Length: 128
Image (cartoon, rainbow, N blue to C red):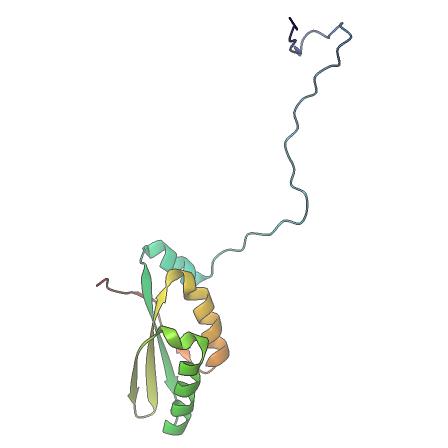
């Protein structure tokens, strides 16, 4: 029957068996990704616990300009999130119904599609 020996730190081993090595922590191999903090709007929405949020966006300009911006917006990938549009004279308000996970994508796409737009404050959407 084999005898199992454990190394004790106080007494050195006098037997011919190799000494046991102390375990080392496993280190990751390869590049590591830095953790990037969430953007302020995304962090605020995450704190609320709301499943969906409303994002108001305002555009100002002539009727022709607002019409071209509305067409560009509705034909872009962000167009599927449009909840409703209010247009009055030289101002157009667009409301986006977004999931929290889509917030960073939506803001990035809005800034590239409508650079002159003014983004409003996030609001919780009422659950139906």
